[in-house]
Length: 148
Image (cartoon, rainbow, N blue to C red; front, top):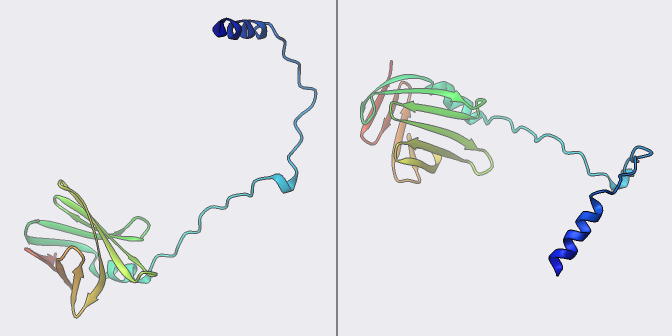
């Protein structure tokens, strides 16, 4: 019985006429309007990123697990990009937490770890590996990269 009632109601509205709108809708009062959203503030790029990125930017020949490495500033100079033969790695600095974040993407997936930066000439990463960065040389476990 219920389906018949619903069908009868729908059939009755099929021939109903729609009255023309006589005037444009009135604007909503100011106190009821949604606040305007401003675009998000762009955080300034950390000086630490620019300093390290410019110091180590360039092409490297490597021995070990990779043959070549190109280091450059990327993503609006907010990240340092390490482009290996078989992987890419991004680093950025968080001035609030005072730590570096490294994101590595390769065939096995992605890996994220953090570091407090250079301490006594070495970078210690939360993944357990260390790295030494000096002018023209980047040394990592099983890998030595020398600037061209």
